[in-house]
Image 1 (cartoon, rainbow, N blue to C red):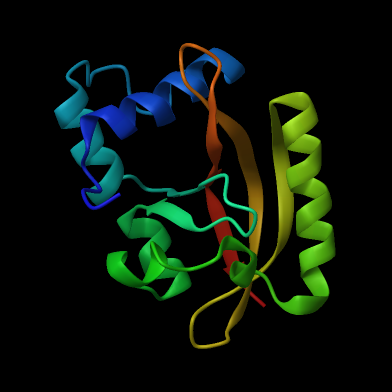
Image 2: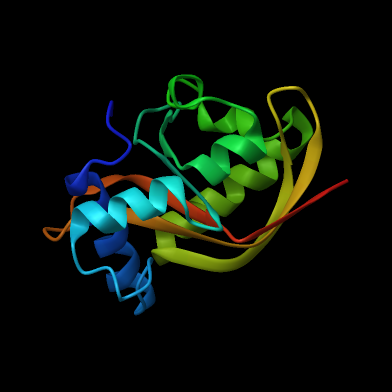
Length: 152
């Protein structure tokens, strides 16, 4: 995806989140998709990442909060295999978490260790991961909201 403010992708993110979790991804005061997509990318106080369904999934979205926390630009993060967001010893735990989400549709309250581009470790806390399902039920990947992080 070349446009981080793409209203169609925003509709997939927000629509699948709302259907699975029963609440909106962005404040309800933003009914226009373009405005909400802009806010989510530029101003959201939480990180949002999404990866595709490739055998080794690549990130296809990372808002500015995610880019700052992980230390990647848009062009870098959207070429990164999502498994590289965790150190090798933590990848098995991450994979088990992703598998649970595939079975259940979403999981909330997750915490785990992640790593920046420069190698700094940090903890993500109270993360919610969900399946990116369109209105017809087709799977496009998975996405995560990371509201809290802390250095370790």
